[in-house]
Image 1 (spheres, rainbow, N blue to C red):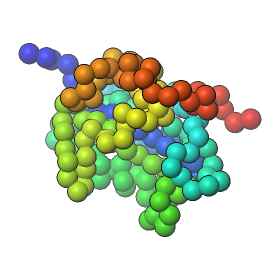
Image 2: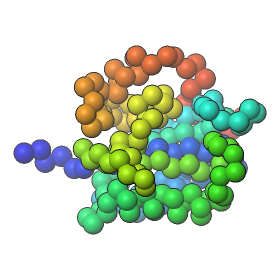
Image 3: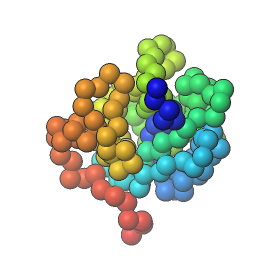
Image 4: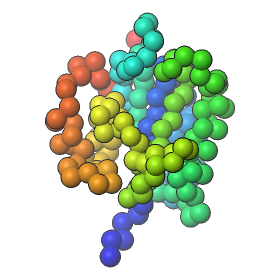
Length: 171
């Protein structure tokens, strides 16, 4: 029997306002929903993907937590959405417009879901280098439910992105 704790993966993005502070604030808040310390990736800068022309660059990160007893993927999703609103996110006017905080529930251990509310694992995470690179920093052998290969191999198969870099701070 596998006694390893359930791993929940959350992706962070921001390209409006003080992105660094917003992501660190959200990480601190999410840590309250974790049994033990939140495992935090570095912050990464990335080019906006599928966003309106002229969109600012993103700051991205990933965190891994072990959920508290009684938490579910749906309750975590609602919590993440409440943090987005608290950080100033408004209802979408334009698809993929700039936003102060974008939080995605990427994976909830081996769980799979396909409902109106939630799809697990996140349907586009495995093709998004700005999610996989920070996740690989924490857990290079991570495998999405049903995946035959670890994300380290998935990253090798994706097209390179020389614009994705570890964030070194303003300036």
